[in-house]
Length: 242
Ligand code: ADP
Image (cartoon, rainbow, N blue to C red; front, side, top):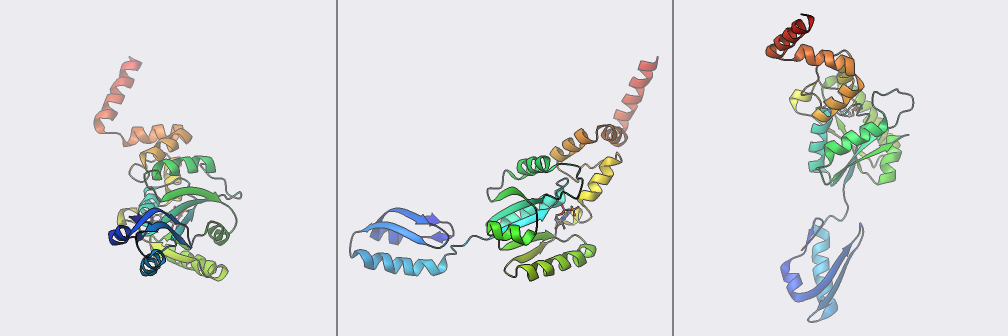
């Protein structure tokens, strides 16, 4: 029987008839009816097992604007989900910035894109990142490093956050090389100017961008379409004129 990271041996269960195991972050309660020498069996096994188990979950926050979520963000979320017990993708509510997508739209997109991870959830916050981390009991802060240019800013932020809250550890991760030049700002700029963002953002985000920037996207679709599609479209325009 497994309780989080703690595995109780079958030998233990063979020697005691346990009806339930209740666990919270600081305690382990076994409700057992041992066949022989009651207290002795429980104490021996609990004492053996507890030091090996990690009863504290590692919660990490991954803060950012995610305006919009890109494949680079998702690459990092996947990597983070593998090393933290729980990863909270935290969208910063910044009243000073006029975003392309409002917070509700970004939450909906990220929830749809991360729904298949059982240990990832999406939330929003404002104010200091360290305060939000403390509020939800996060001990790690995940940030992405793309190129050397990110490093200086990220280092400054990490050191300031460490000064504000020493117990919060910043963890940097690198995305796959193909996403190392990708930023939400670039995606917004390219999309707003009618360029194609295929492969840079998930299809769902592409659709939302298309909805927001309709005329520009129609142009991009036309200019990035195949030769056959373009020729067909030219023929159809010619037919209409005739
Ligand atoms: P932007 O994508 O414009 O940098 P965000 O504020 O949404 O803005 O970024 C949030 C976090 O995600 C930051 O730590 C940033 O370094 C990281 N990040 C963004 N894009 C990528 C990417 N392509 N690869 C790795 N990390 C990324």
